[in-house]
Amino acid sequence: MDVKLQKIFWATFPDIFKEKDLPCTETCMCWGLDVGNGWAFLLWELCKRIKALQWFHDCRVIAIQVKEKFGILCFYYAVEFPSGTPVGKKRDVKRQVSRLIHRYEVKSTIVCEVCGKTAKRTSKNGWIYTRCKKCLDKRPF
Image 1 (cartoon, rainbow, N blue to C red):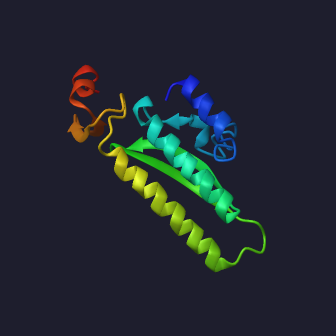
Image 2: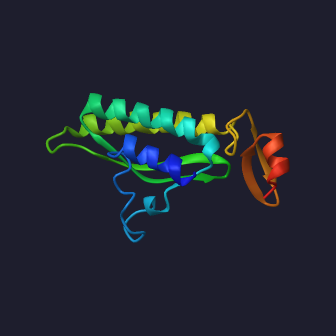
């Protein structure tokens, strides 16, 4: 994702991306949002929903790594809770976050990572991409 767009994510969701300035010995967020601009709207929707979950459940979801892998948006995370939060509630919230992220991973399989148009996962030269035909022809990788 380009730097300008990334900065908007950092400013809008500072609690989710609080590890962005840590060194690579501590987090993979030091590499930034390692996805194409075409997935920006998916990631934006996901972050808005995560923010709502955080508010509702009094927890903090922290992005550890955001990247493309096998043509799919991958969002790795940790969840922090206030001390004294019951184990059952922690389990339930983690399950909700996991399901939410999974929905956006699935959505990413039909959205071009480059331009955001309808696409499909394609294998080329041993790599798997989610690209529309136009972007695949333009940037075959």
